[in-house]
Image 1 (cartoon, one colour):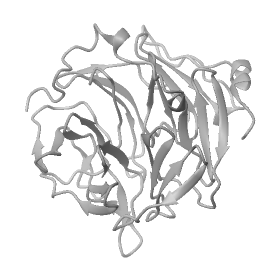
Image 2 (tube, rainbow, N blue to C red):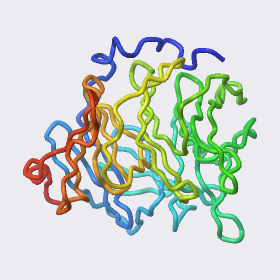
Image 3 (cartoon, helix red, strand yellow):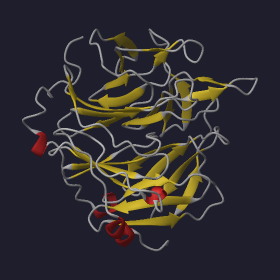
Image 4 (cartoon, one colour):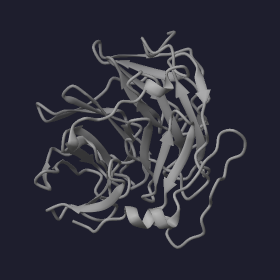
Length: 333
């Protein structure tokens, strides 16, 4: 297949207009589960305030849980390393959760992709009868019927792939074959046609050399591909690479700042010309798509030495000063 994102052929010339302001006030904030707690970390990009919101539940967010937005003030959480068969919907207005049927097998460390009333779970790990992690088959959950099912068998058994949906196609990018025994990078793209429920393999080669790249679909239908990691540490080095993909070509962007563990489990958020994404260590990384540079709000690095600008040349990474960072932290509510 040729262009994988129909209608997205231009990216560099239209960077300034590629992101949109979110108008609904309920959608302004960016949420991330706080591991081993019943709290969500919340960042308000308008007010530049970070706070925690405690949910009215005994359910805890576990490391490796999959978290994604369903709609205004509505989020979905599936799995986790200790409770990987759990699944629930979060109603932020009431700060309550409602359980949904558990997946047919334990799932963790994957990505959730929403298309209409269905949630596609891609790149996840499961646990075998001996308690060891292994790659899980792609699953889909129907929000209407509340039923789980597996997708048809893939043409290649790719583990730890990133994923995104454009139009009626689900794309799998990056990841490994023969994982975890003798993992090798998968350098092509698998495409699932949601309408016809079948797989095809693209002949476009990718520069993605690792697992679990985080993929964000921009309003232009370009794809921002951030980092990559192996949750089991079979491959021990996390990726700092960032690419902009227009469906035909990959443009190298500024690398991630070399600070902390660069592991991004959760969806990013678009706001104006910025993309916000939390790391597993609760650091908030901010990428400006017009300037092609990174900032980070290092909540979990407080008290440690500032890294500062870590990249060379025209593509610079910067950081938020400690004084400005302290002003951004609000009380728990």
